[in-house]
Length: 370
Image 1 (tube, helix red, strand yellow):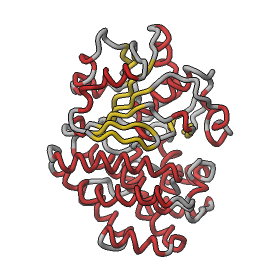
Image 2: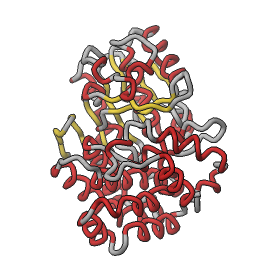
Image 3: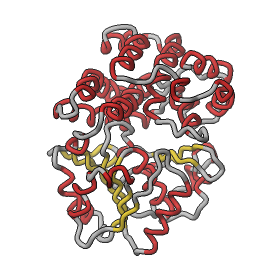
């Protein structure tokens, strides 16, 4: 079993989830709140975790696919009512981000919007919060090693809450938990991971270690993703995708960019409930084209790894793994694009894109992806 200390502690191996109570106890967690979603409960995946704890933990399984402040408050009520002393997040990025929101409330008063990065919230967050164990069941967001939670606030805005204090205390990455993931979700979450690697490498900040990690994630994930989509039981591909997902998030401490500046407000569009990874996949080719003039030799580096022009290769990969053809196929209407383009300029990822976009430029990217 690999024990990795980079930003936070990670236990990475097939079967690592079986030691979750031991790892939780090391952090002083004896009465955990487990945050997950109903789909995982109904699929029986939580059976790999819940019976391990004695006594049985408090369960919150009402995580929405795009986590909301209302859901965070509901989960926090359960935490308080059952006198929990820590949190175990079990699921995809939505469950882990929701758990981070609950954790924040264990030491900070609501509302959550005041802690958003664009509201100057970073300085308001301190370390007086409960321990958190994060256990991903998808290979995509990398939220288990991320310092951010992306939440839809009570006012409808989808905002990032960022702080080093938001990093999980410990992460358990068990590729075994992803073996039953269907091809559609494997594709969408996998493209989320690859988009993190791509955007971090292109981001303007100087951080060679982060770039090296991002490129390693891309080298592992790019060939593994179509294999994992084609054969969900391919253990080597699942291991590689979970590692690529973790590395993408380790690297995006450097900053993301225009893909995420656009997908964050798109994920908040009412009535659509759009999947973040699918949006990242669709927007990656036009953002790559937009960034090409600003990234110099990095374009050649990406071309060497991907085996062709990056925008064209990613577009072909999207088609191969079944990503929808464009935003229109997801139900997005043209009259929503102006709103998204304007909101993208206020997103916390906007400033770290290598070529900072204007509202008309964001609107043009969306038109290409439509």
